[in-house]
Length: 336
Image 1: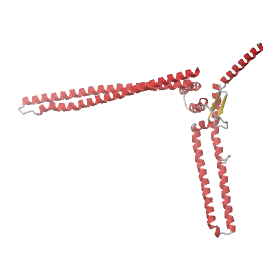
Image 2: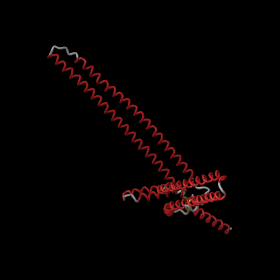
Image 3: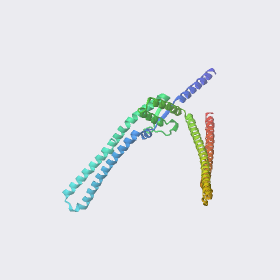
Image 4: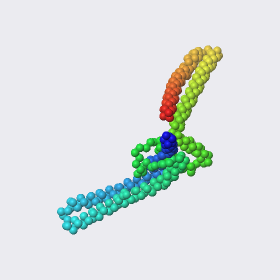
């Protein structure tokens, strides 16, 4: 009985040890082709190499057309030529065909110029990638990192184990560091530390997205408030200008009337124009009043638009809050 109990106890310890070892094993992978396509230096050099390849293809096509033309001419003139001339032309065609095939093999063969130049082009970037992968593996305690684009067959690969974007960031950082000042380097390092923490913790990445969404909503709300304040200020200025214009118009009308009355006292002539001046003053004030009404309508319209925007922002914020709560609930359910 004691032996049986001891065996069960040892079996449980071994199972727990294996489980702990399995949990501590970290595996990741990269996609070398994806990384190369996202490195600017490689893309530029690759486009130049593609131009060369296009030129080689054009040369091969020209050789093919020349050979086909010689074949057609021989076929047309064969009845008129002697046996020796026919053999001579056939030998020439055969020589040109062999020359074209050799040129094609030289440029596009397994060990041709295209493959060799592609390898030479990719090698410096690949060396940088390998260095970056080693740095990531040491910093984040990865046990295995595979290359998805190599001959290794990966029947399934979860996206959360893909560190290709981390490698691209490291390559871009190295390129940027050479052009930064000491102050900018410190800021860059702080930013890199945040990015590394986000890479290490997927839940933190979701929280960062939620924080960014909230920050964008706050900035939008502040901007809308500024626009509303500017609209109110503009409305106040418009009203003040309209009142000032109306006062000026009335003042001008009164002055004209007084001047005309004085002129009538001095002379016996009839001063009918003086009686029309108030009407003219009224006509002058009408456009100012209409302009003020138009501005009031414009302000009301802007106020309505701002209220609609504010309502939309609140709805978006509420939706983001609900999504966050749902995500938190889902995470808790998964952990449980």
